[in-house]
Amino acid sequence: MYFPHSALVNGRGVKQSWEEALKYFGTACDLKEQMGCDHYKKAKERVSASPKSSSGLPLR
Image (tube, rainbow, N blue to C red; front, side, top):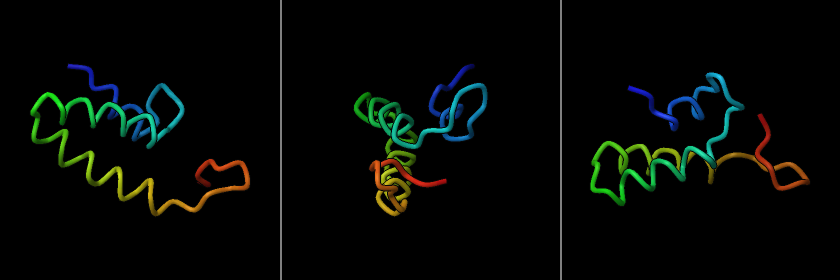
């Protein structure tokens, strides 16, 4: 089974993007998937805690 949010979080085959993964986790949570809600909460904390560059994008 393919999970696009996992690819985005880990940067497998795509550029790593916590913000993009957050969208997928949010969708899973909206569909009543508890694991999606759990990951959404963790991703939200990660995105909120990431230092931002002058362009507004998180620094890696």
